[in-house]
Length: 202
Ligand SMILES: [Fe+2]
Ligand SMILES: [Fe+2]
Image: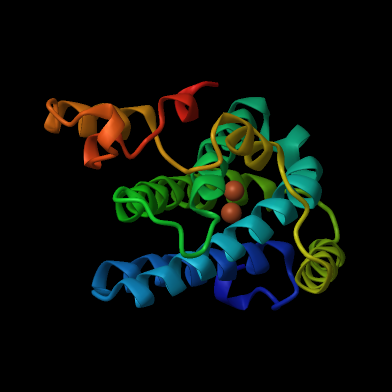
């Protein structure tokens, strides 16, 4: 059956629709110029990705894991983990950070790659399963509704980022600022010292 023939509540159709929506947001971000427009897109994409990850990790992945195989599924788990660290760092609307655009761009590249792997490898293999994909899809849609109404639980990556510094930055970005402003005295709080030393402690 062609994908466009899948019913709307088919689990795979739901995931692919989410993929299309988030890729549209990534495309919109590339064209956006104003900070306010970019921030709105970041917020929408972060919420959509957090919900999508819960649906996959709690419902879809466990259902298809044994059939798809651990190699593909473990890679997907790790791609989720990396994306979720960036999501946690971006998940503070209005956050000030000169790497925020770059962080979102890297998130978009990584998610586009992940979507390709899901759509080219995982989903076609999962589709071989003889299960009720519409019942599975209904469970996913109900969970999505619940998350939208009650909020998305804090995940391990959000706790990890909060514990690290809560300021959404990477050690590489801090090192770059230090090198480009070598004479900025630490006590004067110039650009080279924006990132407090303590915030790099893991
Ligand atoms: Fe996905
Ligand atoms: Fe995924």
